[in-house]
Amino acid sequence: MSSSNNRPDVYARLQELGISLPPLAIPVAAYVPFVRTGNLIFTSGHLAKKDGKPWVGQLGKDVDTATGQAAARAVAVDLLGTLHAAVGDLNKIKRVVKLLSLVNSTGDFTEQHLVTNGCSELMVQVFGNEVGAHARSAFGVAQIPLGACVEIDLVAEVQD
Image (cartoon, rainbow, N blue to C red; front, side, top):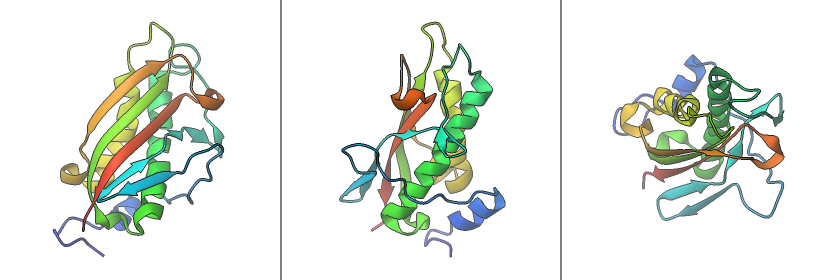
C-alpha cells in the first residue's frame, strides 16, 4: 500500500533493504515503549542490541565510529518496530520530527554525530527525505543503561 501523498510504500522499502521489523520490546523498568498524544508519537529510549542483547561498549575506547554507526542503525530498526506497534501502519507516519541520541563515549571522543548518522540515514532511506529527514541532537555520555554503546529515542508525527 502506498500513502495518499504518492510516496513509496514503507514496507516495500523495508523489504528492499532486507529489514524485518522486530516485535515491540517489553520494557525492563517502570516506563512504556511509546506514548501517543494527539498526532505525535514519543518513543522511549531504545538501546543498541546485537543478537538480542545490549550492544556493549564505549566509543573512543573499545568501539570505533563505524561500529557505532552500525549500532545506531540497529536502534533505528527497533524504533521502526515500535512505531509500527504504535500506529499499525508505518505509511501513516507523516514526519520523523526529532531524534535524540546518547552515545556512550570517552571524554575525548567527538564523533557522536557520525555515530548517530547510522540511525538518521536509515530513517531517510525508509521514509524518503520529505518524511524521514529530522531535527536531531547527539550527545556523548559517560554511561548508558546495561553498558550499551548507543541509546536513541524519537518523536514522529502521524497522519490524521
